[in-house]
Length: 84
Image (cartoon, rainbow, N blue to C red):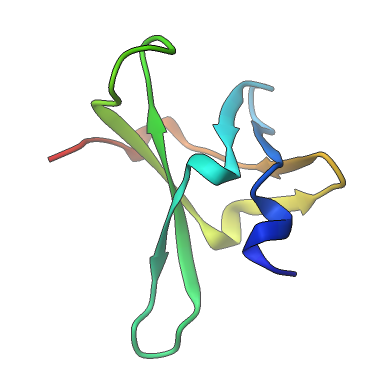
């Protein structure tokens, strides 16, 4: 599967059913040795017009299912971090 195939999909947290954002909004953490994707990094906005000041990192192994319209992930709140 190509990243462009994922870009239009919405990410949903399986734990609480919360919409996290679109895959297209995410940055990728890539292992430079292997080229493997390690995580998706999503900006967290307090409202749609404000710049993101937080982000959530979703390890690649926390992706549970990739469907035709959504990506189901297991996001853990302890993974929030302040953007530098």
